[in-house]
Amino acid sequence: MDPQDNKQLALHKAISSHEQAVASLTDLMSGRSEGKYAAMLARIKENLRDLHAETETSSPGDHV
Image (tube, rainbow, N blue to C red; front, side, top):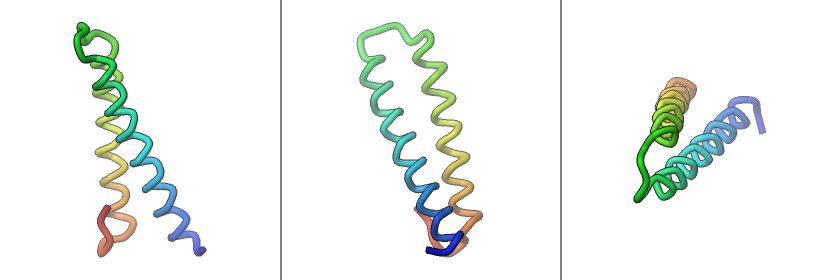
């Protein structure tokens, strides 16, 4: 694998992990007050947006 392929693979893995974290925190928050979980969820979603943006800029023709 060339370095670009490795970077794309790492970005896709990071995106998948962040999506799983969003789903888990959303489940955890159901029926509870938001509090600290809402703050964590907001940070994870922000990171996820950044990862998607990085994926788009690293390979303009290949979107996630």
